[in-house]
Length: 131
Image (cartoon, rainbow, N blue to C red; front, side):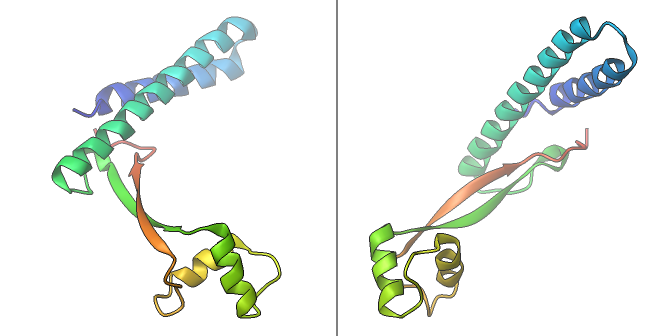
C-alpha cells in the first residue's frame, strides 16, 4: 500500500534537519544528514507515485488516501515533419513551434488526421499529507 505515514515522517525529519541546518555551526555533519533525509524523501515519494499509478491502473480510481491522486493529461503524438508541412501549407509558420501546434491540436476541428493522442498519467502527492 502507500507508504504515506513513512513519507510524512521523512518529510517532518527533513523539515527538522533543515531548521538545524540553519542553526548549527558545524554544517558538515548536518549537511550529510540533510542529504540523507532528502534522498529518503525522494525515494519514498517515488515509491508512493509508482504505487499510485499501479493502483489507478488496477482500479481506475483517481483519488486516494492522504489527498493523493492521479491527474490525466493529453500528449499529442505526431511526426515533427508532418506537423511542419501541415503548418507551412496553411501559412502558419516557417518553423514549427510545437507548443503552439499542441495548443491547436486541443481543438478537435483543427487537429490534423495524422495527430494521435496519448494519455499521460501524472501521480499527485500533496505537500501536506492527510495522515
